[in-house]
Amino acid sequence: METKQTSENQTDPVYNLAVSPNFPKDHTCFAAKASGLYRSTDGGQTWVSVYRSLQLEGSLSTSCVALAPDFEQSGQVFAAVQGGILRSDDGGETWTVSLLPTPAPFITSLQLSPLYVEDGILIAATLDDGILRSVNRGANWTPWNFGLFDYHVLCVAFSPAFHKDRSIFLGTESGMFMSINGGLGWREVPFPIESAPVISLALSPHYPDDPQLLAGTEESGLFASSDRGESWEPVLEGPMGVINGILVLVSEDAPVRVLVMGEQDFMISTGWTRNWQPLHTGIETLGQPTTMDVLNMGDGKGAILSGYSTGQIYRINI
Image 1 (cartoon, rainbow, N blue to C red):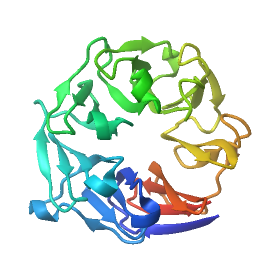
Image 2 (cartoon, rainbow, N blue to C red; image 1 turned 135 degrees about the vertical axis):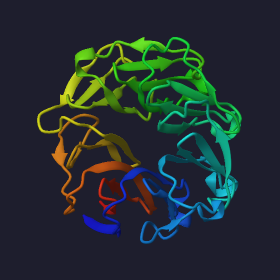
Image 3 (cartoon, rainbow, N blue to C red; image 1 turned 45 degrees about the horizontal axis):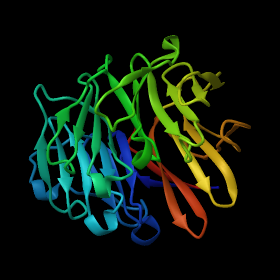
Image 4 (cartoon, one colour; image 1 turned 90 degrees about the horizontal axis):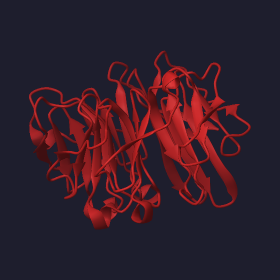
């Protein structure tokens, strides 16, 4: 395993990371930070601000960033800032803004439909105002909270078979909710309320044929469901009380693995939820890991890009 520090700013927390779907060719990734949005075109070695065209007098804190699945063709990037969601159609060179309802919500998660190229659907989760939904590629946003009784939404996960089942899952302060009609209506999922809030989510890459879900909590570790969320059991407790992120690692010649990010460290499974081992990164930092994403290096190789509360960004080659 090789670990490389790719950012040295010690005072600028990293809130979110997004990697180009065409990373093996374009080596492009984005980092949303307290001071703004940054782009790297050399695999995370160097970073530059992409807000220069806005001619800002100060910083523009950015909580989330997301790239279109056809980023190579469309160049579309979305960034959540206070009071609005920005969209770029040229890889971050120029921006348009869609203002959000007032009072300005804080965006906690920004996710695109797996069918985005065809349906143009995005979901923005907010800390106090439920869900905002766009059906026209981020041009307009509408609150869509029918059936959602907990407006404190912390994470969003689309079904990989969204084109068939129209399913979306939300992690909230009180537990979980799901939609089976593309976000038009929500119902509560029977997650154990004593283990809430749910702050990270992941679905099997073969969902719903393989009906397994994972939910990371703030204090109670990782929970797994094998029946589309109808029942849950803890699978990773103890020192990993906080599960800030979950990545499902898929390889053609290996079983599906799961990587989870805790308050200080990472754990990786050698099966879906079996045989957990610490991921020894070799990282020395006083900060906490805050976000991560997968880097597809090509030729069967992979890596993890991880961001920290101290502003550091590391690439961990596995």
